[in-house]
Structure formats: structure tokens, C-alpha cells
Length: 483
Image (cartoon, rainbow, N blue to C red; front, side, top):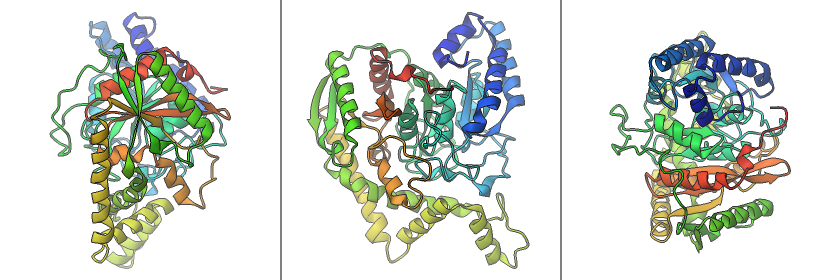
């Protein structure tokens, strides 16, 4: 059962081949047996899962149906879940039990999804390797000596290792797409505002977006269907009708215009990944797509702009964690200032402290215009590049990452080297565009992803292209040895 996709599970439940309760017990036992070597979960919710599974079976017995009814999933541990620890991978929130459900959690629960647990992540979603978690690094199931990508590495590792069919994740600068590429999964970052951020603990509010991680585009369509939609509780949520993402998966790619930016194939890209990307282009051409070279001239400025904007927003968002109302509090503070200093110093890890300091500096009176304001102007230029490109093409294609997954600890002494791994993904967050990564092959036994970008609210187009590609390739069906 653990090899079944979400779509296959939905059909199996509808045909009464097995019950949700039976499936849930199988997967919980598998997690207990295999996750110690991966460290992909922070919390397991066995009692909740079995109760939800029994409720889903009862709903099906009454004739109710639905793709997510009884389907087991997990949530990245920054989605608030009522009465369950929501840690954000940080010592700061190690003792925090959310008093309410995030909108994404509530919507998926209402659809009948079964929550198996909360997955590990980079602390406060800050990282590209899932090594900054207070609960320890997550291992890549394709090679346990390598990172699974971050910050949604726990969700990615768990799905890749067949511990469950799909999981929620979030993407601030590539944190869905990069782990998907590193673990041979399909991951989708929706348009900014498509999925509610209410109850999703913020890193950088203008960049964060929740989305699905699964093995196939078909499964991502099912999970996104349950997650997407307007939320009056979220001021950044956009009141735009949600289409049936599964309905157009089989649409023809005949005449689809695909743009390949020349800037993607610079000296920083592993030539073996470049070859796999060209192979994927050829496959799509055989399916009727028309490919042309385009240019994104301001891409070179995206990383410095992102690493001013994101830390600036983080320094503001994380100021609420002060040891007073909730979260970690130091012992025996001498006064209020000592409480603030020691609670934050003890509660936040090195990478989070680094980004808070960078952000506070960029927002300070003498440097706001020179750094933050200029970064926002670059952000607009990046968006303008995409708008010009989408006048010529329907989809933009390129590598998800410049290199395959690196070894655990390899970039610990050089955080900037890790930041540069986001070069292809952060532009979509700066512009608010939807982006998808899908499996495209292997380099040295490690998975490689190809990234697709589309105009606003065209998630369906991305899913259609990815699904057609997956019907004619088998990369996404490969399973890591031992799992």
C-alpha cells in the first residue's frame, strides 16, 4: 500500500479494496520503522490519524466520496494544528501547542484527509538543506549522507521514502521546488495569494506560499485542490475562483510555447544537469511544444535582492518571539532586557540569528534606502522581465537547482554557497509567480529536477505540462533503495 499514489489511494478507497484505517495503520508502522534513519518527522499524531481515518471510513460508508477522503498526509511543522506542537523546527517554539488550525489544515481536514504528523524543517523555514532544525538534520532517502533540500526537507524525505503519499510544504525562495528536485518528487509553489497563509507561521510575509509535495503532478493537483481558495482571514489571499486542477491534466501540449532563458545556462550550472534539462525539452517538443530562447536580464540581481528583502521581513516577523507571551523563556531573568536577550539568544539558532541581524541592519535608518528600497526596485524589474517573457511564451523551463544534493555539512562554513543554490527558484517568489519542479533524471545517483514557471494563477497549465511529461517518462516512478 505504501507505494500507492494519492490518486491510486482514492480509487482503492472508492472501490473498497481497503479502508482508510487499514492504510493509516500500515503507514504509521512504516514511519515508526524507517523514519529514525531519516528524521523526517518532528511529531507523530497517531491518535488523531486513527480517529480521522475512522471518521473518513464512516463518511464513505454513507456514500460520500472525494479524492482526499481518507487519504493520509502530513503537514510541515509551521502549519498551526490545534492542540498539537507546532515548533517551526525551533527551540523557540518547542513547547508551543497551537490553539487553532491553520486554514490549510482546516480545509484538508474538512476534505477528509488524515494527518499522520508534523514534518521536520529548517528552523523558521530559513535554509536550503534542512540542517538548521533544532531537531537535527533530515537525511535524503536517495543517499543518507546527503541533504534532502530545504526548508521543506522533512515533507520531501517522508514522501520520497514512501512513508506517505503526499505532504504540505511552503516555499519562500524555493523551499518546495528545491527539495522536490533533490528527492525525485513533484512540488508546486502556487501563485502568491492562491493558498491561505493564515495559521502558517511567517518567515517573509510577501514571499511565503504554501503548496503540495507529492510523487506526481496528478497528486499535486489533488492536494492543491484541497488547499487553494480565498480566505477572509488572510489579507493577502486573493479572491479568485479555484479551477478543477485535475480536469485539464490530459490536455494536449500541441502548440504550447516554452521559453528557455539563456541566463539559466551559465558557468554555475552543472553540465550534467544542463544535459538532462535539454533532454526534457526534447521530450516536450515531441509532444507538440514549441521551444524558443528568451532572456531574463535582471535574474543576476535576484539573489542579492532576495537576501535583503527576506531577512528584513524575517527580522520584523520574528520580533514577536520575545519570551513574554509564548515560546521559549530563559530561566531567572534579571530584568526585562535580560529576558529578551537571553530568551532570543537561547531560542533561535545560528542561521535564524544571522538573518535577523542582516534584516535589522537593512531596515535601519541609515541603510533603508541603500538596501531595502533598492532591493524592492530590483524585485519590480524581475517581475517586469517575466511579464515581457510571458508575452512571448506560455511556460518558462529550466533547471530547478544548479547542482544535485550536496553532502550533509558540506556548506556549513559557507552559508553564501548555500544561498546561491536558490538562484533559479527565488525569482518566482520575488514576482509571486507559480512554479513547479518535476523529476528529470539522475546525476551520480542523486535526483535532478526541471522547473516550470507560468503566469499568475496558471497552476493548471503547469500541472498539465508536468502530467504529460510524466506520462512519457518514468523518472518519477523511481524509488530510493531500501525504501
